[in-house]
Length: 148
Image 1: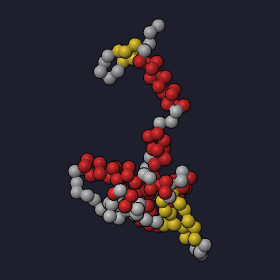
Image 2: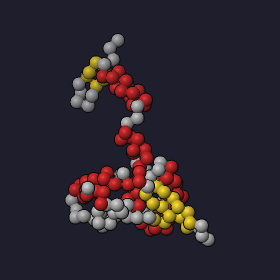
Image 3: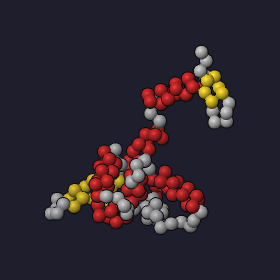
Image 4: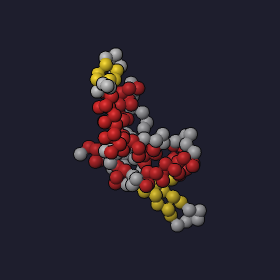
């Protein structure tokens, strides 16, 4: 029996199904680097939280103000996730009431060029002038690393 698969153009290719299944099996064993990064920053709010942190340290209420629609519970969950991956640092100040401040780690800053590319592509696709975005190079913390 010959296994064949039909592709969108209507042609049938014998053995294509087996090759596709073999590739899917390999992908499960070897992680795709793009998929790996997207698992970390691909949630609805993670990328926007990182965007806010490129402008400097933030407290919980500042995130809630900058990201309308995010709940405190979701914000806390995403921040803890990003912290567990080593992208965000959480500093608790010994005060009453306790004050918590979030900042990017060195590893967190590594995504900055990717974020700038996403911003530029978004502007191109929207065909708009530059927006008032925390990713503008004149407000980025550590932006001198981008010009080097």
